[in-house]
Length: 471
Ligand code: NAD
Image 1 (spheres, rainbow, N blue to C red):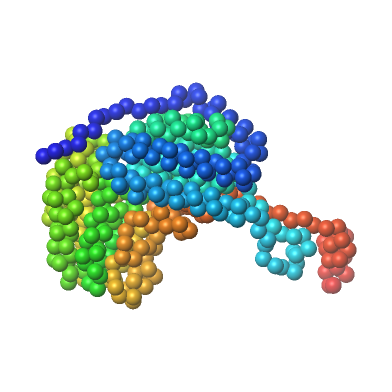
Image 2 (cartoon, rainbow, N blue to C red):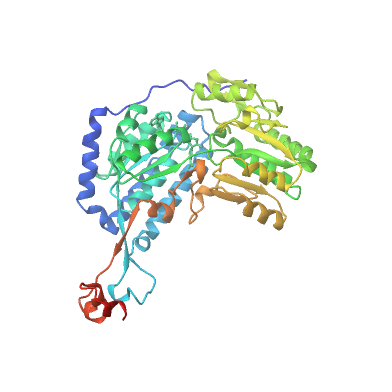
């Protein structure tokens, strides 16, 4: 059996005493007023696109080092989507940043009520390890488009990407515009002591609570892009081959370390056997029944993360029908399919964040909806069906960041759509125009001409006589 060996690496940390100076430089950069110009913002968005394109191969190599990730997956899931979002911002920032007139109201018309779009200031973006380009640089594009200066804190676990971003940012951006602080808990803890224009945090709900507490102290607005367990419903009228193909792929991209991965399948009992057969057949074609030697499958980020998943798997009361092998020393968990998983199983206790797909049979769509509804609100609900009524029923009766019919995982890259969570999967958005809005202050502007006092507003001034009341 061939195993990719990924050596344990230590990570680079920015000295804590450097943080105040870095923050001051960004405050000064913002204070210069430079970022207000749309031309300047567009130049910076182009710089970001060049940063990614000039160093394309280096990013692929960094992800291969951090996660053993195949190049095609990095291109498909991170590079293309991030560049798409940068181009969207580049093409539209002029339009998005334009003042907007308030809807006509005869009462306010003469004051010319207008909404101005102003940057919030210095934005702090804290990234996770699993999609360390997309989750760091997509919000960066939105924050730059909105005219902010930005401090990036990449995850210390995706060491190679963190080092690469720290090396490239000073080459592509002025020191008063974008800076990087590397490191782990000490650095993040220090950063969140300060007030920011906005904090955009992507990661686990556990750490989000720590960030939320700190942000409450400084009254900093926050956006949380979190995780959870995304239910995937396979209806009896679904195309089972297509469902198996897409679900198995989506579950195992990045070795299952994807916030939008389909975590468990609620399959109609009448088609359960057929669906599992389709999954097994697909499995053989994807990995030739030896994923450990496959060039199409990633590794878990650390041995500790692999041990956590291995433990959950060892405790399951379900039946493993594909995969199941673990080699925590080499951070390997095989793509695994577990059937007949009880609702209170170890595999249902937390976000797996690994390549383990749980199959739960249900009698009908109502039972599937009730099952999903009884749990925390996820980032996505997936429904595989060709029945319009079933589709509408699931959309209408579930709640999640997004709902995707007959496909999985890729919706964060859909230009023009908001990407974000609800409830425990987070709040706020970080892509495209929605991300631009996140990092923008909507400032109300009115301009009241003096003649209005004679025309209409004179009753507001004292003395408040009876004549004024009864007029
Ligand atoms: P994490 O919460 O462990 O770490 C994220 C960031 O928080 C890192 O930069 C880390 O340095 C920092 N951090 C960790 N512990 C901290 C502490 N005690 N105090 C202050 N800062 C701390 O998350 P992760 O393991 O890197 O990422 C996995 C999680 O992220 C999963 O739950 C996944 O679903 C979620 N995720 C969500 C999205 C989304 O867009 N919604 C995208 C990717 C990942």
